[in-house]
Length: 300
Length: 56
Image (cartoon, rainbow over all chains, first blue to last red; front, side):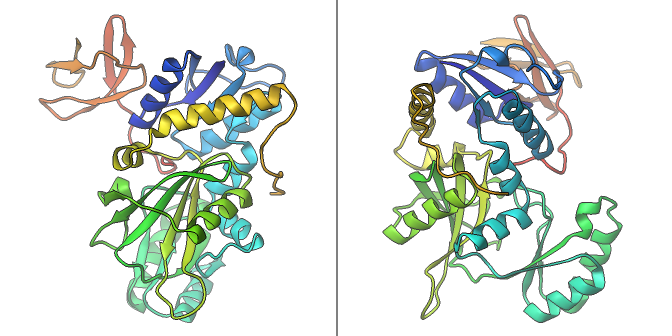
């Protein structure tokens, strides 16, 4: 295969992918999206010759537009722009999960600080205020009191960018000191790990301890459903374990479309990058013979 | 293993054999985060600052 790889930074994750792709005998064309332009008629060289394009942009905004253009050129792109759109915005993700009946934390969105404070008070303390676009746990606020909520809301309202005035308020989920990351390929779980920390944020990027995790059938099924809810592809599905006496055992709080898997690869016995390349080969072969195995298209 | 000069302090920075353009390395002397912008010959530039929409 000839594989295009859109990037602006080669993280360890991209390096693992590049190595696996080359070891499988594929030709990789790295395209730094900072250096190319995307017109209406033709893709930037050499994307036009590629059998598939991998969107591995570090910046969400670039990922969304670049994958949209690649799709516009009728080139296969992983992940699809529809999936990127749903996963890159927490409001979109929450709505997609909810529409698909996938358990996800209770969430309220408000557009003014006053309405947001009402939403926060309705949840009670603690609750969580998240940016609608963001990653690695940045700008996440656990609100323990009204005074803290007022301060954070004021800060967000003065940050300037309109996205900070979309207030995404969420219930605080009492998790057992860890959450779970599942890497899925068109819904099929490939590997999973727990991410443990004394801090309420358990992102691997924030230093959480990562350990291989054996999924039970319910978690596997939720990962499949969460993937399908956003259109499938190469995804990182994040779940939290619930400890309630009844109801769901898990809740899905995030689906990542440019998933980082360096920590997962180190924690599990699975060669994650090789699994991704195997899947990509099958996917491209299926597209070539007209039996595209991708899940049903989502309606963003 | 190749080497290139840190653009901040000028010290030599060792690069791995499989270094890729676009990869980030840290200068061991001054701590500057550096982006590999050339591999033959090896060349480094100061890495872009973290942007708000970066991530996975």
